[in-house]
Length: 478
View 1 (spheres, one colour):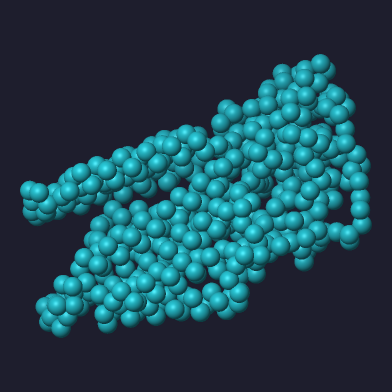
View 2 (tube, one colour):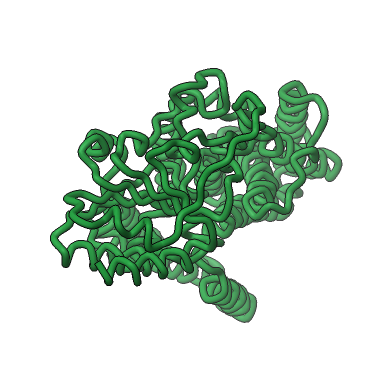
């Protein structure tokens, strides 16, 4: 048995190395596919080792292989179905939901272990054996942490998914604001603490679950607008922390390591998102900017002139530098392929084309990168905000496809508004700006965009893919 344990530990070490290499690979679009494959290989190895170790420890007939096979088949089928049916526009909602599933799985595993071992723990209380008290404390802390964090992640992720899909009414939420969150958090912690005295108590177990679930709703419901990418990233981190806590409950090193990696990576990404928005983390989570934001303007009605595609195409004639700024509208209309075709046509005429990627463009981190990669846009043409902003003053044409908050000058002109202080792409400095958008409606933060009304802006109103297809035809005729 010791030999099997040592081999399992060695296998988990290899799996952990694959996880680390996988996350490293995800840091660049060029290596993202390989990184994903390495992470998947590490997870497959960890699951295989766990199942083999379970069989060795349980002996003949100890493992219900039918249930194991059923679980793997059901999970695989659901994952395959979601991957096939969910469009790229629905990826943010899917990612949010997957975060919730991860938290729920960790909670269920921890609670199952508590239910299984609670009678033995109750009978063994007072055992003076060396190490028992420490094991008991670590076990119950792990169960409490995985339950609190896991259920909070589940309900918070479901609310985030509904808000992203437009199915959540911003008026829905628990009264009391931050005070309600504090009370629910205290209730969950107290419920987890009471399990130390009576691990078999159903009352405290239910109380822990209910308060944690309500905390997730109270936590995410007030948050909206441009803050949603930060929320998704933070929930991803929480799902990893819950998994790591569950690793202590079941004594699985691979789960501890993988959960810690996800938790750390999510926190780092959350920090990057907050920096991109010039917002402290505490303000994002507790001040609820953008949840019910209105226009930042004075209320006066303004009109923006709409142009035809052939008029807009004339601005490309003789252009030396064109910068494409993608946004969520590009994802909605699935226009990334037409955008690439326009870029190819311009480059064939001698124009340099770059793509400006804002860190919080779309509804989740990296949303635009994924869409453009799907359209086979070369990675070296994608520029982050800090690397591209200085080029807008030399840009002949900025082609904005469905972006709004990330190019809104209100970030500079209205420091007290929902977008105040947020670093934006300096599209307003381009000689000509072409904006492809369905209407003059504000972005997700609810702030009117002064860029729409400027004399250097040409608005192409309509479906993104349709208008860009018309623009492509006109460009070809130049």
